[in-house]
Image (cartoon, rainbow, N blue to C red; front, side):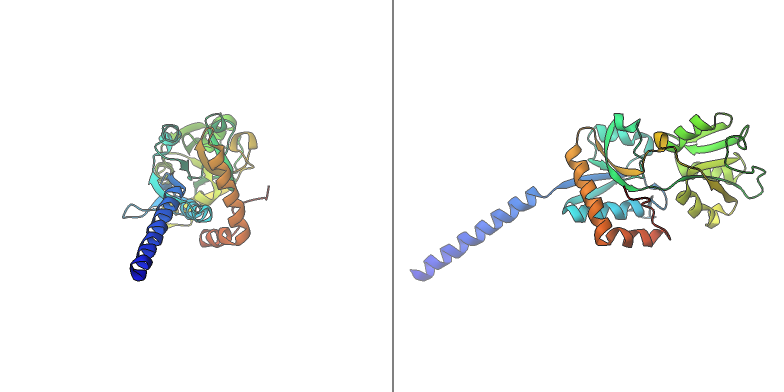
Length: 263
């Protein structure tokens, strides 16, 4: 009888543990995160279709910090915000700048990096500097629906602004002599001109960001009103900056701190 009773107690305890474990698993925060997969070194696809890059590694570190179960999916840049609004995923980690215009449509965490824009040109270009005056009458390529394209349209109206769906496409056109210059994040352009694919070109110079257009940096994007999730990401960003994980990821990709000034 004692053995039977003890066995029954043991079975009950095991069942309770399983129930509690299942409940805990159900309570785990599950987040689907989208990225573009065409913006190296921040995000790009491997030959076998897996997302990689600084954005992705930061996303994984944030999920680990939040003890969240995260999955990553790809989404074309032009459809990123509409797809987020349609609940196709919960967050975007794709180097999306926190701009006043976007804040009308979505919410953001605090920034997780902030680097300036730059202009690249062919090595034999006669363009002398990055001022609008030097680019007047020149064709300037930029990825559409970005803070860079908004800045180009606002400040380089004397140039022939060419919009491209992806960074890869403007790189191809400038390398083949179809446009005179391109504008993007200095890190993206620097990595490109340092590669065989970008051997055609050079960095002409960096541009002082306009906060009203570029915003304070790139943040994790969430659906408008989901401030609870945005706050969780913000807290996790602060935490990985403090515990050294951010630096570990940063140093894997860059020789300087891409976070920018603390704020």
